[in-house]
Image (cartoon, rainbow, N blue to C red; front, top):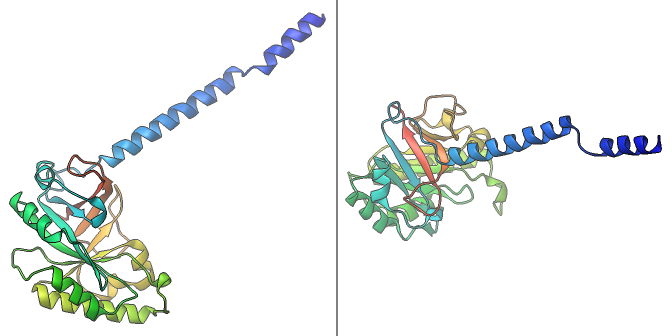
Length: 240
């Protein structure tokens, strides 16, 4: 009798079929999530529906092979040129020439600094980006908010300086600017309703709607892994 009880107790200590089944389900879920994450990093919108596709290249992307980018289906590339009052991407002129040689349309991006005045930011952009009718419309990237500014900056002041910057950059470029608008920036400052310019919105895999009106460009995958660069690229499409 004691042996029987001992055997039964030992059996109870081991995991039952239910526990093993749960462990298997969890393992399969983890594998599925990992596969989905990797496929997501390689996902691009269907070219049949979105024929005009391209990339946004920032300083963090390092060296990019624009010929490879063209081979992947890009028709355009936007290159970060300046940030705030002083930040400049020294590789912009060479990158633009190389991208142009690869038969990609090119455009310049200025990253808006909510802590800086418009005059200094537009002057920084002008020193990096020449007047050229072949350039795509300039893009002003609106992502950083004013929480980290040394001095408090009001919502109204940011809206005013941004409008001034838009006008100054447009005067230099000779074309209306495009506002690359993050969801956080839009929630804070309500730019889409106040400044009537084409919008470039961001949301991985799903079309964004946070601006409350139609957009022109959409960053559909912010971290697309490609053979064109060592670091993931922001992949964008133009509304057909």
